[in-house]
Length: 310
Image 1: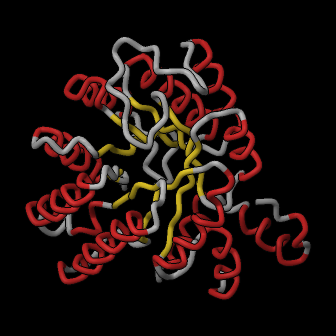
Image 2: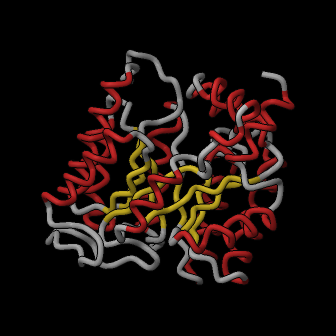
């Protein structure tokens, strides 16, 4: 798609180019009873000089959260810190960021990228917990065949301290290592929700699919988990600052806002993923590759803007 059209599409899903833009969006959304995850757009870099941008920008994000008293945590892509160039340097940069975040009880989520870095991303989280930095969790993509084992390994080492955002996964992996059909991915995600809830881990359920949301609500009810109720699981970890009682629902900025508001009105903790930065074009194209049907919705929103429900 041409850049101007991607730009039109991206305005709904990207908070802007700067942290000030993102803060403004979050303040406007705060009255919808939501909390936030802030993501600086960009991922794999070609040299370590580029990593400094992300180091500096995430430090500005942490400062902005504190200064504006935002109910927010942050999400980082390890490859943006040079993971595929120099693992040791990436580890040190992430550890330093975690230490600063811990001073203000801010949680950091390690985004999961493609199959090349699945294991090393999990290893980073485990290593940080070993060093006493427990304000870190991971993303696990349900579509991967290895997901069940990854959850088992994570929980076996961290117990109730494990904190996982479970999602379908946006990277189009080979059918040799991942589910590639819609129903298979949805079934795998639902199974992962059950596994996380039964394991005592904190489950951040990140999905816009109504079958997944409906299944998750039933799974929570079955385990007597829900709004205004302390986590009843004996194997759960201690309460986490700015978190739900063992679970939360997460959605992207500009997606399924009506469903998110409904969940929030019912008392469920809901979190909005707030991406910002100069690399909005790449982010927009990735969203389009994930779901080509969006191209039709973009065109419709331009021709019939009243249909564009947020």
